[in-house]
Every structure is written in structure tokens, then in C-alpha cells.
Length: 406
Ligand code: ADP
Image (cartoon, rainbow, N blue to C red; front, top):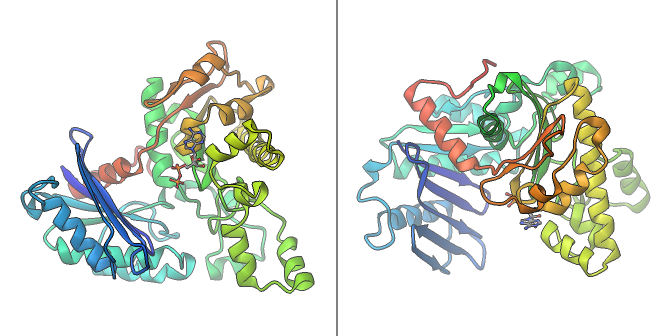
């Protein structure tokens, strides 16, 4: 099936044309800085690629550029839009409404609109992307794949915050979790790599990108995850602080007179690796800083690793013992150093790395634990677009991707 995967952000549009049968990416591209100065559009199909630096006034214009590029006789991958069998949309927040991917109908869009207060940054862009894509590709099924859906299996005692219960219930305040599309894909790939049914495995998945989260997965079902109601909690991230005592927010507000908006912005955009190092949000740059003897980069790395290890230990307890630890996303797939430090001296918890394998692994991923390690440690490259394409295909064909019933 030829699936066009669309990821619409507030000022960006990313797309990927996938053939689910061959796992081939036929074309991909992105529009950046939509309705801002310095807009750009780039497209790649096989060896052929181009970039435009013209203004892109709206998502509608970005969508038109995408279709034009896909149909372009020289750079395209299609001879007609009717070759697209389905469109899969990355949807960030399905709240407690969407626990599986959904075939998009007007009713689904209404329900997505109702979720906007829970994801004010992401859902409006997703809805706009869906509407504009339906306009340019009207004759094909459109499917929304939710980043929160994989975590719908987290039990109530884990997803609730210890607030007055009535307040939580009437305002839908609970842990929703994110990175679920990536996590679902990685869990299934890890089970394939191990040659074991996913139902038999107790896994901890470390998704370490600019945004980072860690998830405990019992028999293929998410049972605990570090991102919560919003996308701020848990691990230290590129520019987000991760866990912090909420008392700090009240202190900054009362004593420094900082507005709630400026505290929110600081916690989202000026904290994490960037805030501590004062240098970069990128782990690659932090590690270069460490090599060069930069003390703040060293501190940022130590804090990142400390938080990660604390969560690995906690989730082994949540699972009552785990058999598989998985590293994925930009840092998890590429940083031998972060993986080595995260796993150091954890023999007591059953984790022993093969340092040679850890240093050598790249590309397709693989096992990095020692032969005699009780827990298997894997590097598994994530592929959110492929996951969305496969889930879209399953919805269109009326099958379900869920290996485990919710
Ligand atoms: P996003 O959450 O934006 O999808 P990615 O999954 O692409 O992010 O991860 C980006 C992170 O991965 C950045 O911190 C980047 O520095 C880090 N990264 C990528 N390659 C390497 C590498 N070789 N060594 C260390 N960190 C890396």
C-alpha cells in the first residue's frame, strides 16, 4: 500500500511517501518556517532532491508544494495523486478518547477539536494539516495515529496524580504519555530481533531524542511512562527541564515576579541540556564540550545520565524485574557514551554491557549486552513514519495493529 505520512506542526509540515509492502521510502520532504521569514521547502526522492527558499504563507501553500513535488516529472515519485492509497497523520494528543488509530470522519475532527485544550500547541496544527490534506487528496482514506494511544494501557494507580480525585476527573487531569508511536514500533522490532513473542517480554524503552521519555512495557502493554499530562516531566531533555518540584514555579513567581508565561517558556525552551550547559541543546555538542574539558557540559551530561539511571531502576521495580532494556532515537541510537554511562555498574540490577559491541553498533542496531548479562540491552532504530504507515494500512484494511487488546 502507498501511504503518505503527514506530520503538521504549527509552522512546519513534514511528509514521507512509503510503500508498506517493500518498506521503501519513495519520497520525503518538509516545509519549515511556514508563515514566517526564512521559509524553506525541501524534497528528496531517491537520488533526486531540491530545496526552495521562497516564502510559504500558509499550510495550504505548503501542501500544494508537497503535491507539486510528488508529481514533478523530474523529482517526483508519482504520476497521479490517485496512486496514494491512504494518508496517515501524526496526531499528538488523543487524550482518553482515542486509544487506537482512527479513520478520520467529521465526528473524529470534532472530537480532536475537543482535545485542543489538552494540547494547545499541537492539536490545532494537526487539525489544520488534516483539513488541508483532505482538500488536496479528497478521494482517499485519512487516518490519525495518536502519540498518546500506546499508553492507554497504563493502569489507573499509575496514570493518576495524587490531586483531589474530583478535580482530576472533571478536568481530565492524568498522565497521557507521548512518544507512543515510536515506542510501539520499537517494542515490536525488539521482540523480532530477540525472536520472542512480545507478550513474553518485560521491556524498558529509553526514547532519547530532543524530547526524551522512558517507558515500562509489560507483555507489549505500556504500564508506566515518564512524560505525563504535558510534555515536561521525567527525563532531562534538550531544552526541557524534566521532573522538578512544582514549589520552584511558585517561588519564581512570588519572589522574582516571573509571570507564569515566562516560567512556562523557560521550562520548555531554556532548560534541560541547553540551560545547564549554556552551550547547546544537542547531546552531540555536549559530548564535544566534555571532550574539550567544558565543566558545564560535563555537569549537563552527568545530570542527564543520573536522571536516566534513576528511571531505569524505578521501572525495573514497576515491572517486578525486566528482561530487556532498549535505547532508541537520536541519542539512544548514536551515543555510545550515554549508553555506557547509563548502564555502568548496574550488574546488581542484571545489566552488563559488552563495551566492544556498544562502541561498534550503528545503523541497523543490535545487541550491546554481554552474553552472560541477565538483561538484554538493545539498540533499536526507531521509525515513526513507518509505524504510522503500518498503522494506517491496518486501519484501512480493517485489521488492527494492536498485538495486545487494550
Ligand atoms: P527529535 O526528538 O527532534 O526527533 P532526534 O531523535 O533526532 O530528535 O535526536 C536528537 C538528539 O540526538 C540530539 O541531542 C543530537 O545531538 C543527538 N545525537 C544525534 N547523533 C548523535 C551522536 N552521534 N552522538 C551523540 N548524540 C547524537
